Image 1 (cartoon, rainbow, N blue to C red):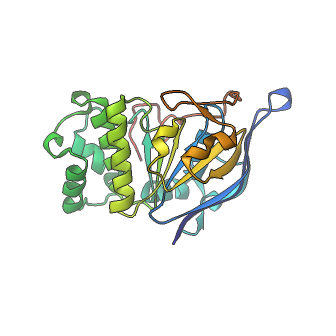
Image 2: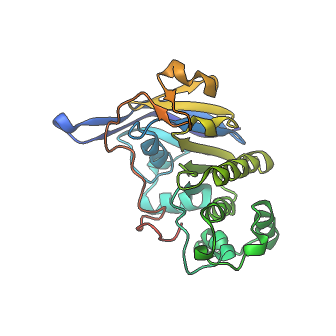
Length: 267
């Protein structure tokens, strides 16, 4: 079952000599339950791609279909509600509400829609994420890895069609990064959840079903992570990507998934 379809997506920043083509006719699709990873160096266009797919940024041309609906044909309010109900976001900065507990942060997207949480699903997510004994803790009482687990739970609670993960391990140590990747893989397999993750670390793509590379705004699919060198990428010892010059400015993390400043509430 096709969940996501991207057709000829284009995005340009600036004009004249400052003009940068962040996305150049990007097209691909994903099926239900697939775990996809998009790799590329900083400034390659991968965050711009994620923001456009998630409806956080407008493309200059092209289409993004989620469950058969073109998000760019929706009005702003309709797209906001559709995004909240159909897309789960995970950012490297967590975006948890500091005054809310672990459990309250996880169920917050449901409360925004005046929906009663399914307590059985809440309990299951807390258990799967290893947070059952920390449900009453505040974000400030958690480690970075634990906070990212909460963010994963928040992304899954609405049973979204698609989970978008923007550098989900960017602020974590090696062990926490492995734990987060294991949880994302488990979510994809256990819940048949479609997940699209962007990263600049090729080591994190090992468990992905499909791996894409963004370079100079163009998207190509790699047969396997080991084929990165064929696309012009190289790795440092810790898996960091190198080999392309940053184009400066097109990879932008949004202020928050509801448009507020960092640390604000999720949709």
